[in-house]
Length: 88
Image (cartoon, rainbow, N blue to C red):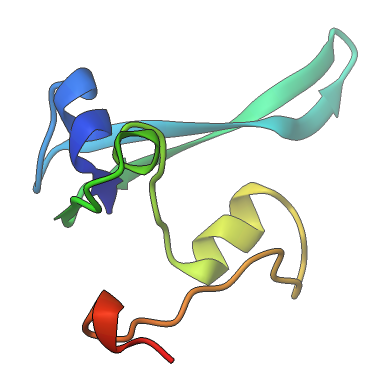
């Protein structure tokens, strides 16, 4: 899921593909090779805050753990509330 501005800047939308690159890849004789994963864009979000909409993307936790080689660890979380004004 991509922020609306990020999707616009990348020229993609639902059904399109993006490549996600992690600097934490595998060590090779030539140095560290970044981990690269192709992801299909399944949705777009628009928060109304340009900073978020232009720079954030969400992927499933198991895919993020594999890409960033974190094992069974989460470094962030989100909980949908349905309505920002109804959040408690």
